[in-house]
Length: 470
Image (cartoon, rainbow, N blue to C red; front, side, top):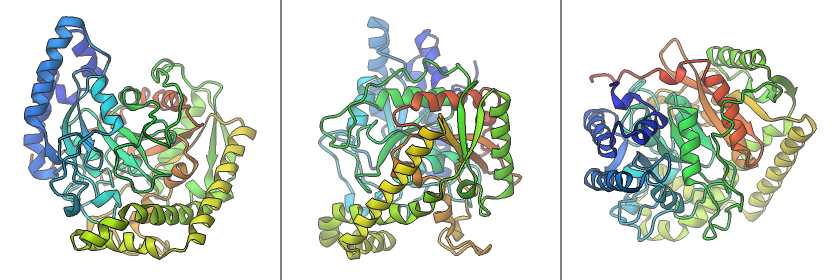
């Protein structure tokens, strides 16, 4: 049999359903991968080995007695360390939260465990998911390059084959950026699709929880397991959760895909990414989709609007902690949190007005152009060297590498629309990258369908990083 670690989440789910493997085998194979790769890539803040094995044994007994609860039953996954897990360390990458054991789990975790999924470990994140400090996680693709934040450990775990899937959070791109960097599929679903109750916030009106996987179908299965209305979360949407895989193979013939070139294909996008994404567009045309050129000048206001909202909302949550334990924050995180307290309410309100203006323009474009999705590069660059993360760019672009990485992603958070990163290439330097699909609100199923039409024609998702020294 093929090494189980090389199979996708949906493939091992099928084997488990057929009785060809056990849940214990899946947990053990992930634990062996963790033992092998962790000394190098540092994906996990904590590994729940004994607890996961115990849960796997219980899953195998239940499956033998009464069958599986669903496609996630018995499958091990990783969970980002800013997501509450009852009685299990949730430290948010910060000394401020050292030793914290929540007395309840986040609703997304409750939903997944109810579906039978097994948490194998908590994955590293930037301190409080702000993305300004440097966690220990390293990229399996290039140890000297940034592996993507703030769901940094989740991306590294899945691409290192020490997890079949993992949860990340996304306020401005923190699922899709590490997905692109690590050759993964990453979904930021519609705002309210997945409850954020029990997730340490960055900005409550922008935060999302979502899955990171190797394949599109895996991602759809994991999203279905965590989604659903939650009365504990005031931002939760009372929307039915469909079968995201039902029409996965229906193709794209007759669908209309919008391309906004001024913003998503600007001069800062490197040639290899631009050319590859242009080939993705051509591929969709060949498959029968109609490509629609659109213009959205309102995109230019999204970066300032999002950062202002993040600063103000984030500082509100940290107001008490930073006064009591300010010395425990990483200096860069502390500076960001304190900066938010200096912004006047007028700035926050102006940012929300800009957000409304952009959202109205985007929804109008979808409606008037009868769009089923928009498409562009997930990121302008594949990644950046770790030692240049906050350095001004040499090409004169007025942003740091970290800022430019999120240039294409944060607009979907402002709009609250689903956005998915899909692998579509590897640079001549061996660095992966992806393209991004943005869909209509609560139409994740169609976004997955469009993504799958491309994935089944290519093998990018099968490319694997060769971890140096292993």
